[in-house]
Length: 93
View 1: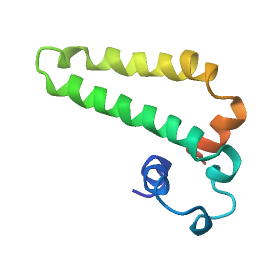
View 2: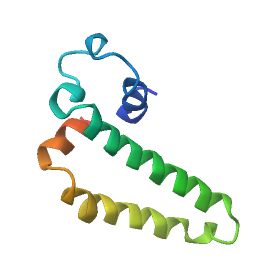
View 3: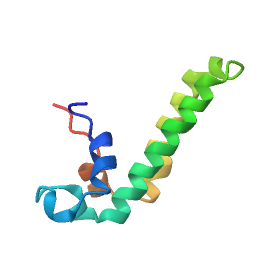
């Protein structure tokens, strides 16, 4: 998927450092911090998928999207700095 660093970060977790470009977030943040961020995204995606799959809770799916926005805006800044987010987030043109 072009332009989506989520899948690239998952793939890059198992690649050797020397095969990654020099501007890769692993060099700035380290594999562990990048892994925490990507792992949290995987957990949120899995939670969304499971929530949507259950027909009795699927009606609240838009509210769960709002909860994810809250997690990103209020919870994650306690664990990641602004510079970390600049390295990890997708770049929008």
